[in-house]
Image (tube, rainbow over all chains, first blue to last red; front, side, top):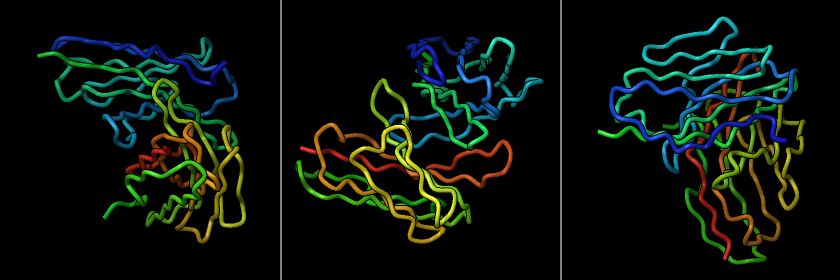
Length: 109
Length: 113
C-alpha cells in the first residue's frame, strides 16, 4: 500500500465551482502534510501546508484529520488558472517526503 | 536565477550509456533529494542526502548512484541506462526545519532508447 493515496480524477469542473480533493495516508507517524500544485511537465510547487486546525489561503482551504488519516483541499470559486495536478504530500520524522500520484483538475470556461 | 538548477533539461541517450544529471542550489539547504516521476506513479524517491557526508537510498535506488560534491551540488548517475529509466527527474532541497517544504528544480526529461 502506498504511503499516500489520492483519487487521480480527472475532475472537470465549470468556472466558479467549488471542488474538493481528499487524500489518505497510511503511516500514523507522518508528521507534516502539504498540498503541491504541478503544471504539466513542470516542477511541483508548494500550494499550502496543512495544519491540524485547518488553514485557509484565499480560495483554498486545507484540512487534516489525524484520527481518520486523511487530508483535504477545498478550492472555491474555481478559476481557469487552477487547472493543474494537485499532489498530496506527507513527511515523516525521518524527513522523507511521500507523494500521492496526484489529482488532475481541469476548470472549464 | 533559479534557486535549484538542474542540467540538462532534456537528454536522449541509448541503452547502456552512462548518464549524469546534475543539480545545484543557492538556497543554502543541507538536504537534497532526487526523485523520478512516471505517469500514474507520482514522484518516487531515488536518493537523498542530509549533508555532504550523508547519502541514503530511497525507494527505487537500484540502477542509480549519487554524489554529493558539496553542500550545493548533488548529482545523479545512471551507470548503464536502460529504457525503463525513461522518466522526468527532479532534484529538490529542503532546509530541514520543522514542517519544512521542498523546493524543486525544473526537472530533467530523460529518454533512454
